[in-house]
Length: 639
Image (cartoon, helix red, strand yellow):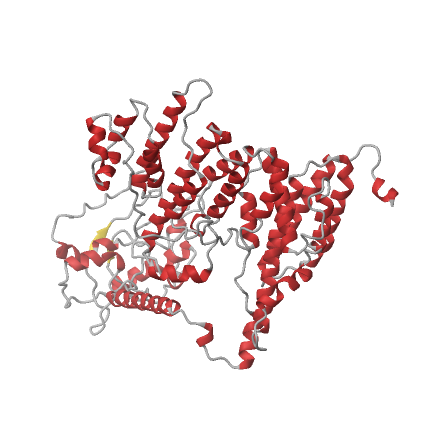
């Protein structure tokens, strides 16, 4: 293929920009090149063409481009489209109206703001550029009017015929104002949401109030955590602990200095670890020192941790130094343990749960910030963990250190302490391990079981707290399983006022008693136990009182159904009990599943229905495992 006849002129890039824009630009034709095709004949002009930066719309030319032979489809003459970035100025179309500035030349026009406005317009050049514009849009398959608004100067050849420059300074300022107005509107909406408008303060007509009460959705759910009991009250300062050194005889100058020092100086000895150097090498464990360390377990963590470390080391040292079966481990008495709990903030020697009125007055006088409350909760939790660990060591090393009655009282005391409101969200691993060991140390277990269950069932009056009390005993030993099942059945009977009517303590009678209790767990039957507590005076409060009563009924039924699952799981189901377990499944489906109507306005019913379905599936699995081999319908044949 032959090369172009004329070479393209070398453009003077380094010359003055104004000189480049004032004069015309001559572009050669590429005759005989690859663009010599009839398709481009409408786009091209004769050999040399004058290019102008802008062009005005011109009438379409009626002349058709000359075509070559059919074999050669390239045009004879071809001129490239105008190069607009070489033109740094925009001549005016009219003397009074300035032409819009191309988008691609925004930066260059800013660098050269002064442009001569007196240069004449060349109509021939405008017509030539317009003639270039029309076939370009024809080949591209679109038109200048249909070009997208975001097309810049580098994509649009006819910048003079396009609309005004969108990214102008006025448009940017207007967009900035709209963004600021939107931000102010969002801030105003946030301020409106921040107004905590009370429903009672809004004046509503009786018709509107009835409509709101009808379609309102109460945010009532069944809580996953028990409410707890107020056992320990926060304290500003720890209880002073004095070391009784009247009967102690020093064996070294350092011990003499320690015993003769002030209480603050004695704490310094403890924190610096000097007491370990005094008593561990000689194997001396004086009782006043051990009692003093036990009382220091109730102090803040920086002191209680040191006291627990020394008390633990001295106790283990006594176990390692024992000769034969004689152990010299000191175990605190029940009175000393109660005194330790009172030092933590318990106001009653027996650790009876305090009422809300007593707690309200004390809480008003001991108001602290949230950070201080969190620190006190951590200090209380660490102190109880230290006490439980030390008592576990005592129960393991000396199982006969406490009588059965002392063990029952200690278990009740620990269970009351475990229901404290500030401990309900914290793990209680040390407490659960101690309870398991105390159960194993009871000598007369079958006879003391009933006494222990009766005492624990009166620890709290709230059904969820009693459920949490049952869950304190892990299902890992035979005594713990027996206590969980018997205590759950007794709590259910007490909540339903059936403790005197059912044979709760007979052997192999737990499932039959549970069948009778399931018949009383219908939501309609539970309303008579809770109805008088929630009925409010006045006709206007009746819908609200009914919703509260329904929530309390489902809440109670949820706790009772969970306790029923504990009773069944703690039983060793045998094939002869297959009929009683099947009857339990029928009672569960008849009295609970069919009496719960789900509603989007009461999601707690859905929670209760899910629990009933899970319990039913679990019992059906037990039925499949304990199914009798010989006869399947012996229960109905006897009838």
